[in-house]
Image 1 (tube, rainbow, N blue to C red):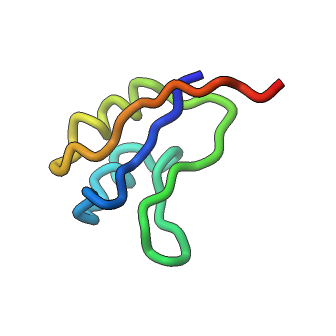
Image 2: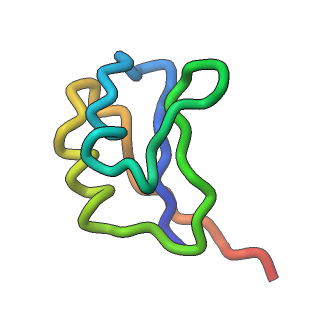
Length: 67
């Protein structure tokens, strides 16, 4: 399954991903961007956040699903 990931070391805290795709991206209590734990992710929405990111720090990652 594909999961969106954010490289927090590259993130410039612009909140573009949160504005474009709030159902996936948000702020943690510590103030960092976090990805919601969903069963599936809306690809169009995440792809738009990837394209809008000025730091190019959002990407898709393939992970195996737990049995």
